[in-house]
Every structure is written in C-alpha cells, then in structure tokens.
Image (cartoon, rainbow, N blue to C red; front, side):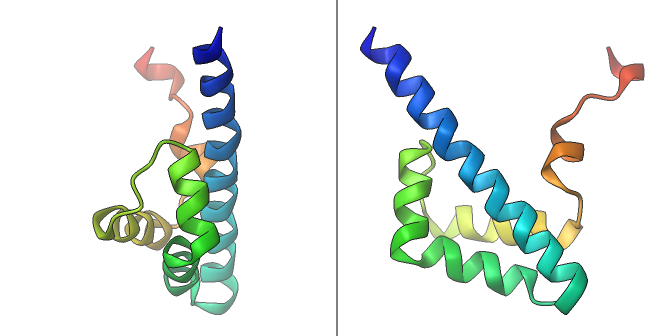
Length: 87
C-alpha cells in the first residue's frame, strides 16, 4: 500500500517537472532565455527538492538534459505522445 502512495507522490512531482519544462519552452520562444530559466530552476533549492521528490537525481547531467530538451522546443505533451503509425 505504501508503494502505491509513493508512486502517486512521484507522479505528482513529475507533473510539476513537466510543467516547469513547458514553461521554460514558452520562455525560450518568447524571450530566448528558456534554457537559462530551466537551469536556474533545476539548480535552485526548490527545483532540486521537486526533482528529488519526482524520483529524479538533480545532478549536473540532469540539468544539462533538461536544458537540451528546452532547446529542442517540443512541448512535453507532444514529446511524450505516441505517433499513431508507431503502434
């Protein structure tokens, strides 16, 4: 039972991480500073806490990966959806 609660907890914080990525992508398109925005967030105390609660190690490699994701400019909903032709 506790593992179900833990999984739900991690999913909740994972959604916060995805929202932060989407916000950074929007910032990148509007102002050109999305990669710096996500970097600052991920390295902040709050960002590290959210990443940890989502089950993600807030390492430098993680931050660089998030920055690269934002630089690609593809919203998380599109990046995580499956193409119907690949099913």
